[in-house]
Amino acid sequence: MSITTLSPAPPLPHLRSHAPHRTPSLHPHHRHPSMAAFLRRLTPRHLPLRRSLSVAAAAAVRQDTTVWTPAPLASVRPAAESLFHVSIDVSDSPDLAASYTSAGQYLQLRLPDAAKPSFLAIASPPSVATSSGVFEFLIKSIAGSTAELLCGLGKGDVVELTPAMGRGFDVDQISPPEDYQSVLIFATGSGISPIRSLIESGFSADKRSDVRLYYGARNLKRMAYQDKFKDWESLGVKIVPVLSQPDDTWTGESGYVQAAFGRAKKTYIPQSTGAVLCGQKQMAEEVASVLVADGVSSEKILKNF
Image 1 (cartoon, rainbow, N blue to C red):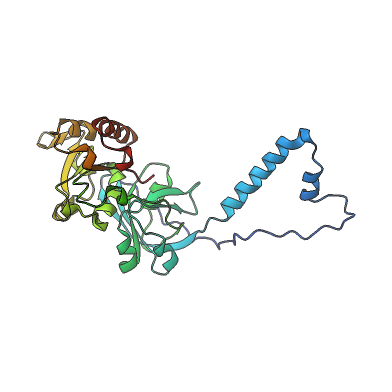
Image 2 (image 1 turned 90 degrees about the horizontal axis):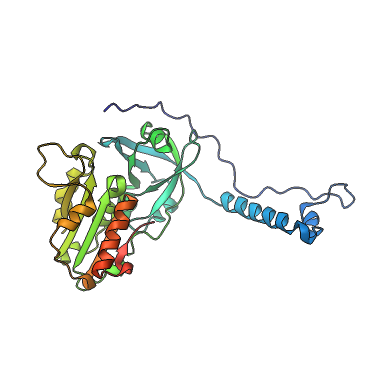
């Protein structure tokens, strides 16, 4: 499969302050009243308009308060077919690095030539931001998207990031490990990105008796992080690759992740089982439905969005 490489994007323009613009006060006798005076004179029949103006103003304020931090790319390289490893240098932005505290968190990234920002889950564990000053991502290049533009950039090109968002995976729900001996992890495609962060951050997998990762992809060429499987297994996570369109040489699990899980012998005790889901929506819904039907508490089924 050929990969189109885009030319580096031009440098970011000077960032405008997000502080609210102050308009000089008008003379009391000026023929155009202020917005506040206009709103005060609205009669009840104008109230819907007044509410609409208020909502619009509030939305504008929320938009203006988003903090964007410029950061250069440290590297962009292929990870698998249509997937890329992207590392961003945040060493000069300690507040940005410090905002990432929990595996499963995500942020927004924007480019000067893109119509809208992208939401991206951080693939590296928080410790990497602290020790090496980088955020790492696994990006799927989709034609016409911000992600495609990002994957066409190179080292030194500047992007803008928001602080990390969300609570991430609430592993306290499946702690302590002696009470939750089984943790079943399910990921498809680039959904493996925050799962990598979870595994490498550590959740006492080696102190549990049954930790499995069902990882689905179309074929091995589209399966990222195969080079990390041995390390993950040494941490106590059994890897179960599942290919939906394997070639004739494949002898492992095939089909969809939820089907592979359904074929597995049930060895877990629902009351002492937790699960982590990330990836294709239908997979997540079907797996969650099966687990809940088996008696696993929905509070113990963790998602990062």
